Structures are given as C-alpha cells and as structure tokens.
Amino acid sequence: MSVFMKIYNYIEQTFFFTLTRKIVGNLS
Image (cartoon, rainbow, N blue to C red):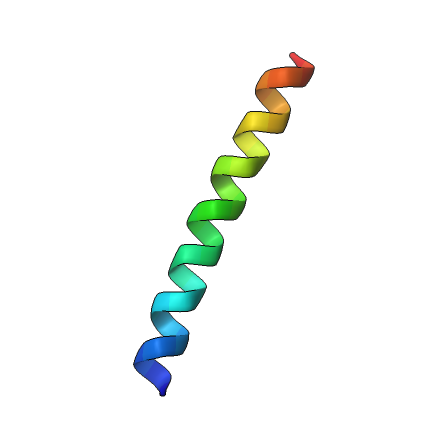
C-alpha cells in the first residue's frame, strides 16, 4: 500500500509540475 502511495505521489507531483509549467508557458 505504501508503495502504491509513493508511486501515486510521484505521478501526481510530476503531473502537477508539468501542468504548472504549461500554465506559466502560456502566461509568459
């Protein structure tokens, strides 16, 4: 279960980082 949460958190952080970079790229 902890392994699943670790993978989920990693994917969520990566997706959030990519999403933020996309928004910043659009604003700039």
